Length: 281
Figure 1 (cartoon, helix red, strand yellow):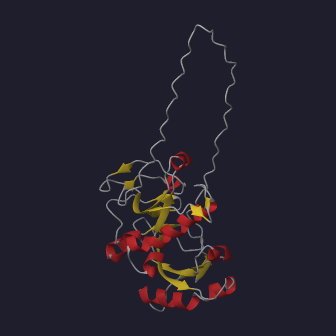
Figure 2 (figure 1 turned 180 degrees about the vertical axis):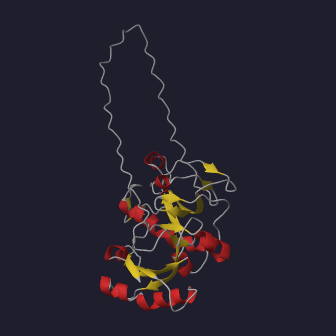
Figure 3 (figure 1 turned 90 degrees about the vertical axis):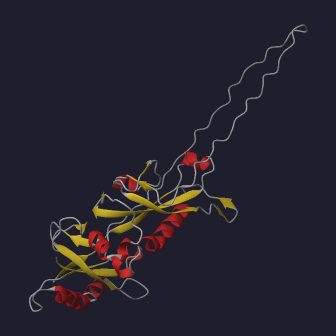
């Protein structure tokens, strides 16, 4: 048996900060017109407010790198979903920008947390599968809000995209839609969570099962309680279920290997309240 605290891939939302430089109005000394020379009043310039960009369209696809996917905003153009892409928009909504009578800035922490909570909550409706199947997959949600200039022009939308991780800091290239993909055996096989080596050993990295691998995630182990149980209790919770899960898939039920990862206190606070059992693929 082997094990170590899990280091699940976390998509970080970077808060975009910006400022608008002030401008000083130039001063001038008006000349005094002569009594015989009439003066013309210059026409007042008219300015039109820029039109806000449209709300993103659900079902749109984009080619994104991992760095682009974890950025708070995106300017990537849409591409046909039948072609290679990395992200698919599964939800677009309106931000609740007025809180307690105050208009929040688009890059405020409260607005960013609003989106960071909504998109992961809605992802299951799009990709399908059970909670267990989603835990054992490499499918994730990422999200975007308008840029500061777009917000100044009136944009108040947010966008939720579904992506698949190929490995650490790399997205899997997709073709077609991820809608209901975990409801199929083929989808669970392609986007399942696998490993390049035994968990806890040098060379171990989580990868999608469609990539080269030697270990596979078998099941999750829920950890109960109001708070983090501690490393010892979290580790012990996985021994019995992981042994049983590995024995069930081993060619020889008397001679087999298994691994277990449990969450750290920090990961528990971030919402990962379960461990993962592994066995050779």
